[in-house]
Each structure stands twice: as structure tokens, then as C-alpha cells.
Image 1 (cartoon, rainbow, N blue to C red):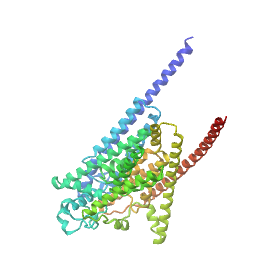
Image 2: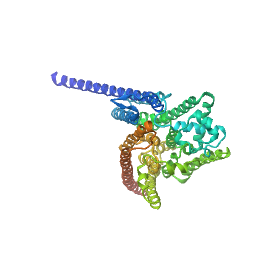
Image 3: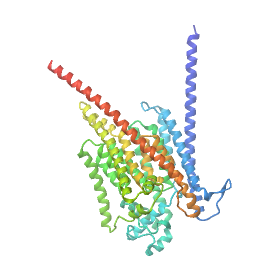
Image 4: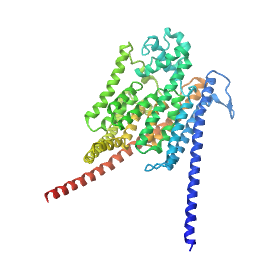
Length: 535
């Protein structure tokens, strides 16, 4: 009599033990991966020191008989690639651990652990020397020129009046002939950091700039965390907390794009909170740092309920942009600079632009315009389908209390078609640009967690391969990228574009059918109610 009862108990106990062991193994794997992320991040201090020694012409050590000054770029690629793989491993564990419909102690611990490691990784880079580019030297010298009263939009770095400052601040020699091209708010931040250098030295200015970027990166992570939490997507948090593009390009590359990333993420957060004027302000401030956030106006305007709501966003953004440029002009600066020279002479890792550039000028313009217009149309269709769903949601919830209806509407604003539209909108200027550096993808990397897809993961994984250019640049001062990373990048971009368009259209069609059946069911309900009232 006991055997049929005892055996199931033993089986249940065995299953429980197996589940505990499996969970323990999974937790151990997560811990190991997170520790490895911090170790690789911390190695950036060694990378920075080595980079400085190589540029100074000191004797470079060898690895397996190969001089490091011929393989430094490959080492940087290895760092990015390993961090990317670790990020994906932690993300995979998160998909297995977190359940969107319930929150357990282990799940909550996973989220806070990933969030903490993401913050620590960013703080760990404070004090590291830049080694993926020398843009920070350009930033700070532009700010220093502004502090002298000269117009950095008109005065190039090789101006005779700047000889003493040039010797002290040592801006990049390859930028010497070109005035600045950065928007007014960016220049103001440069000047703020450079002003600290006036009193405490150039290194203090760079440290101040690094601290500001780190703060912006942590703020972006916090906004994404809030968005993921509101949409039950915290399992995707590792994709932004541990992203090598976001971590390394901020703390080591020291790129201005950390501020434009913050502007993009903050705009989407306030969109979710239905604070439309703040959405426009964030976009406007982002444009005053870098032009890329401007493209968010396309999906956000098309996805609104009405034109008055769209106008709030557009007018708020334009007011901030006009105010920023107006103040700059009032200070005696002419904020145009060398933007024309940038598009005319600079080329890097831009497969589409390089391909189209082989055409004659008229065919080039026609082809580029046709591609850009087609992509904008797709963005508009995706965002407009979201508008239709929002309108339907409002109608369905008419009998719900006003507060409940607002909550449902807010939670619905950042659904998949809108996120896809935002991702595609950010891809458009990157696709048609003559220059595409890895740090340009930072705003796009921040949105990956909201709608993960293989296409963007591949693009973000392939882009750092362009750092092979550092091999020849460090040894011979030759900035000439090889063709194989560009070919891989072209394939990745093509795959990303096709995937984004395919999934967006598929989603729109499926919801079009759903709206059709919902409308037919609503007609049946109205007929039934009419008959009941007549009876």
C-alpha cells in the first residue's frame, strides 16, 4: 500500500533537487559572465596605457612573436567581441530566469544584479585613457577656443593665434584645418569641461568630460530600466546594461553620442508617460548636441492621436532648437563650421554611400533620395498603424474610468510597431551617411532592449570590426580601413533593413486583420443592443 504513495514523493523530490541544481548552475553561469564583463571592462585601463606607449614610439611588446603595434586594432576587436558574447550569454540566462507574468526573489535579484554591474562597469572606466579615437581632444580644444572669445565655427585649429594653446592641449593634427561642426549645446558642454582645464590642467578637463559622459550613460540606463519595467521586458535589461557599444564608447571613446543617446531614451520615456512637451524638449536638446535625435520626430508624430498632439512635440522641439541657435548667434558665433567639408571629404565604413558614389552626380542624388524616401514611408506606415491601434484602444475603453483609460493608453504607446519605427528611423541617417563610426550606433544600441532582434544584434556585433583600422593608424599613421569589415557591415545592414521592414509589415498586417474582426464583432454587438432596446 505504501509503494504507490512513496514512489511519487521520491520522484517529486528528485525533480525538485534537479530544478534547484539547474537554477544554481544557471546562477553560477550568470555570476561568472558578469565577473568576466567587469574584468574585460577594467582591462581598458591597460589598453589605454598601452595605446599611449605605442603612440609615443616606445618599444612595443610582442605576443606570439607579433608586435602589438601591428595588432592593437585586433585586440580592441577582441575586447568588443568578447563583451558582446558575454552580454548575449547573460541575456539568454535572463530569458530563462525572468517570467513577465510573475516576479520571484531570484528574478528580482537578477535584475538588480545586472543593473548594478552595468553601473559599476561604467564607473570602472573613470580615469581610463581614450584609445578607440582621439575625438575627446578635438572636443576640448573646440571648447577652449570658445573660451578665448574666438568663433570655433570660423577659426580652425591651425590658426596662428592658437599656437600656444595648441601646444598645451595637443588637438588631433588631422583635424587642424577644419573648424568645429558640432551644434551649440555640444560646444557649450565642451567649453564647460575645458574651463576646468584652464584652472586645473588639461587632464582635469578630460576627467570632467568623462564624468559627465558617465553620468549621461547611467541616466540612459535608468530610463531604459523604467521603460522595460513598465512593459514587462526586464529580461532584456542585459542588452543595454552590458552593451559594449554603450559602455566602452562612453567610458573609453569619450564620445558626445552619450548625450544624444540620453536624449533619445528620455524622449521615449516621456512619450510613455504622455508628457508630450518634454518629449519635444528632449529631442530639441538632443539635436543641439548631435543631429540624429531629430529623426525621432517622424515616428512619434505619425503615431500620435491627433495633429494638436503632434504639434506639441514639434513646436517644443523647434522652440528649443531655435533658442539654442539664437543664443549662439547672439554670442557672436556662426554655428555652421565645417559641416560641408565633413560630408564632402570624410569617408568611413559607409557601404551604401560608397556604392552609390560610383554613379554620376544626378543618378547618385536620385538613388539616394529614392532609398531615403522609401524608408521614411515604411517608418510612417509603421507609426500610423500604431496610431490606428491607439484610436481603437481609446474607443474600446470609453466606459472605463478616465484614469484607467489614460493608463491603458500610456502603456500602449510603446508597442512593437512604434519601437520598430523608431529603430528604423535611427537607421536611415546612419545608412545614407558617408561616415559611420561604431559610436554612431549608441542610440540604436539603447533601443535594442525594447525590441530585441537578430538584425540589430548582428549590426552591433559587426560594427566594431572596423577598428582593424587602428592597426595601421598606430604603427604608420595611416587611416585606411580594410574592405572586409565594410563588406560584412554591408551584409549586416542589408539583413537588418529587410528584417525590420518584414517584421514591421507582418505586424501591421496581422493587426489590420485583428482590427477588421474587432470592427465586425463591434457591429454585431451594436445590432444586438439595438434589437434589445427595440424589444
